[in-house]
Amino acid sequence: MFRENAFIISWSSHGRYVLDSRSDLLRELSVLGDFQPGSISSVHRRCGKPNCHCAQPNGPGHGPLRRLTQKIAGRAPTQTLASPSAVRTAEKEIAEFRRFQTLVQQLIEVNHKICRLLTVAAKAMPVKKNGRCIPARNQSRTSATAGAYLPPTAK
Ligand SMILES: [Zn+2]
Image (cartoon, rainbow, N blue to C red; front, side):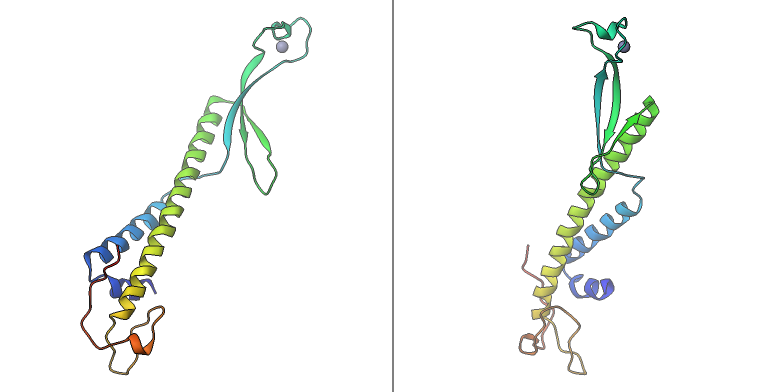
């Protein structure tokens, strides 16, 4: 399906650009590292021992304690990040998750553009020998005139 679409719209430089963009996005998605959603917060806490420095009224308490909070299926479990390396790993995974979200959004947009180009291309599609047109969306017999490929005017 991708190949047919590529054939249909690759004759315009814009069409080629859009197809290349999709290939780039798919490639970037395939090399993403481990990722997970979440946010990291810092908290200070009091241990409850009356003689500890944290018991003083204006004391900072113990910490900071770094925590990873996630919202998965409506629940928000919190996980303590016990070491600086655990914090770094979680930060990296969260950054990678954001990258994933950005790529997916861009992929949706570029596919939308491809679908629009295909709609335009369908109207300029020449009829094949067997009377059928190269598959395209929203293709109707009346709009399938035998003519040259016309570059799309869509942006
Ligand atoms: Zn304490």
